[in-house]
Image (cartoon, rainbow, N blue to C red):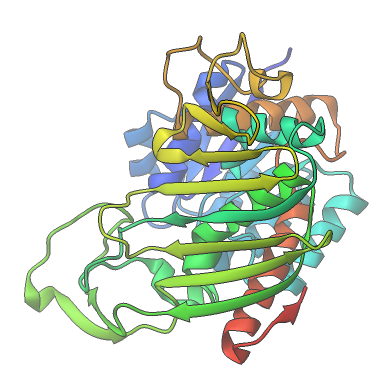
Length: 379
């Protein structure tokens, strides 16, 4: 197996998480990073050999196999196109792009030039999420007729909490849904193999005005500022949303998404009702999958490679009883991505690619349209 040379663009919370996971693969070397106005400093902090302020300089000067783009999504289109035009594979953070048209253009270019692409929907790679997928595919749960759950966080609970994601010029028309709700529906569609065909969405705001810091604050930093360091700023995107989905087989889904639910740091819940049994997974108890049955005892399946499906085993790195979590989903996803890069295989695999990113943008557009109309919208 040859070693891979990789550059990472944007070194905030997520960029650093990408670097850490890539190093764990063993055969992927992060040889350079790019970060606007501070590339060398970020490189030093991450113990990466080279740092650039301009991502184009990094791509032009380094002999890379792939780039990871971990910037705000208003920059994704130009960066991904530049990298692909140089023949590089691309792993892109989500939300994928700003518009559906941008997403279509990226997908078309990647397909025409046979470029391996990825979108960081890493939560697919939780072992119990893969176990649910295997049980649906085997027919063990029967026909899926309902899916419920959601994704709850509290990092924007306070009026003084701020992030670039609050600016629609940078992040787009939706926030809570595009940032974390897309993870939930991506997982659900991947698990069930069903596509949502209609949507009914309701948006809400806890804080119509927020105190925007007058100096730079990184996501999840918890940085304390003085009153004079803020400016009162109107908020235009949703703090929370409730959404109904209708799937192609007639099944109904409902989800609640929030970035302002106190005490919930990063909770995802997926409950699937099937004609033979039901499944329930809660990320706050991520090592176990609940299986509900009418005619016999319910079960709790532990994260144990000796008892779970081959799909689940493929993303498990440690024996049963040894906890795996958020960073491990990155490692498992990147392993699958770089195997595809090494093989030059652009076929659909378990990890999300640019086609899935396009699907994400279509969903964001339709969810936003539904929330504005307060009506069902066809996808």
